[in-house]
Image 1: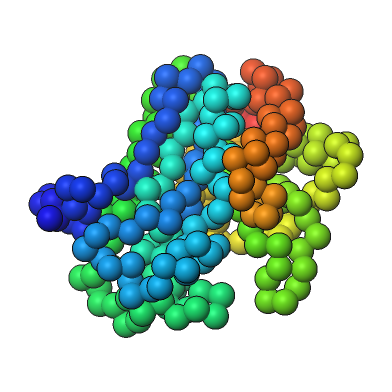
Image 2 (image 1 turned 180 degrees about the vertical axis):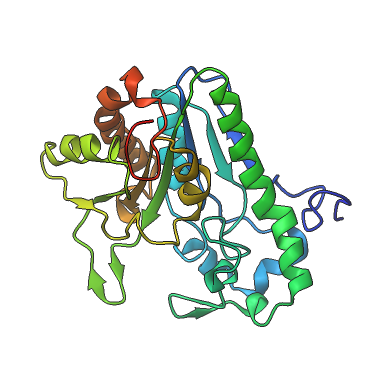
Length: 271
């Protein structure tokens, strides 16, 4: 049975559109996971997909939720995790981006996304996209009560092979004009043995697909960074814990610097 009101596509027995964990964390940091879940509400029938598709990267970022939860505890930071599959609506895309409601992903047709109308898109925005981003805004506003510019860290995972090209990077650090977290993190990770680190690889923080950071961090000059970890390294609890540990070590010094938590202007200069 569907609820009436705020989330029209989410039924009473379905999970919420987002979750907030460690809301009382002491760190002036917010972790986010845009693609944390492979869930579908009962009313949407998995968009006509077979169950095996839901185990693939097209449905969610494998391991990203576990890494985010581990980091939330080790950094003592709050985190916001999206509650549903990116195939319903991609919470890391602008709403005018065709891939927000993707019709074919990694060669797999998504039947429930073929030629959907504006009304259906609006229902998905109201049910999934808007609540998740309101939650991020609310958590950042709460953190601003104790620091001028809380840090935003976005956690994703990526496939080891894309379009028949092998990706050598174990982890990628994504950033644009603000180097305050990215550069020290890159240096720290590159100093760790046997880790292949990508600087804006396999994706770039300068690409407009990076909606969450572009919308919540860059306009207000919040310190931020995007993380991509290869999913085959974090597809188990043990792997996720290991890579969360590497990230904790990489983040520890830069995030402990109180001077980090001040805004940058659009030219990348401290304000």
